[in-house]
Figure 1 (cartoon, rainbow, N blue to C red):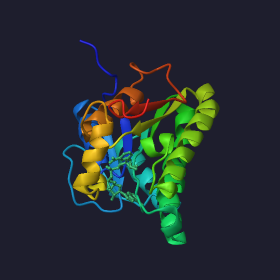
Figure 2: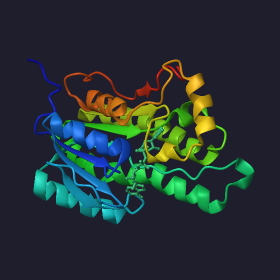
Figure 3: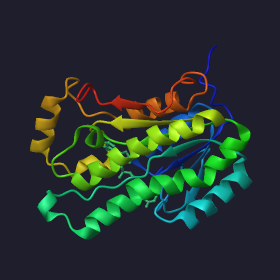
Figure 4: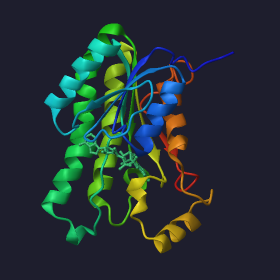
Length: 240
Ligand SMILES: NC(=O)c1ccc[n+]([C@@H]2O[C@H](COP(=O)([O-])OP(=O)(O)OC[C@H]3O[C@@H](n4cnc5c(N)ncnc54)[C@H](O)[C@@H]3O)[C@@H](O)[C@H]2O)c1
């Protein structure tokens, strides 16, 4: 029998209450990891995982969550920066608030997620960080200039941080999901969805578990030990 080597590894997932984050929490727990998840809103229990209310826009809140995780589960091996929001509109209609909200969660939030854990990883000489970017950050998407800018920025952060962390045995990667069936994409009108699906060679939206397995792969010290600074596209060949 082979394994991904995630048994008993402590892994933190932000935005784990629902959607892609919830599926990541579920799969990592099934793979034997000790999982903690944070969210601004906790109204779902994931069996075997530690739930903590914390806001990624607030560094103090993430530091407090990190202290709780260290006390209850032990030293953290893996961090999944998954929490994200959209405030979509055409460029001329986006407000300053739409920009700030998206930058605060999707970009500053990633920094606040990684910062409380990274020095511990350096001290222990091991760790894996996975940030959830997006096809929009990779390819661009009309109606998402604010969102795409943050998701492209996360790719820059990942590529730069990977160069800093390598000497400490810590890997940093991004996943760029295509369109995935979650609450986030529920708002897309059916007609628009049909048009998007027609552009996807796999002829469907992805499912949260499609992303969860990619996260497990990139966290794995067995499966992806020589992969760092990479962006893994999980999009049914929508953009290659
Ligand atoms: N669904 C897609 O098609 C798609 C495509 C590409 C990338 N993504 C990215 O995947 C990630 C997950 O998206 P999803 O589709 O599951 O969305 P979702 O809206 O279903 O879930 C996002 C979760 O993040 C939480 N969250 C929001 N703001 C937060 C904050 N300030 N602090 C802590 N938690 C917060 C929400 O409460 C929610 O539980 C996001 O980063 C998103 O940008 C999604």
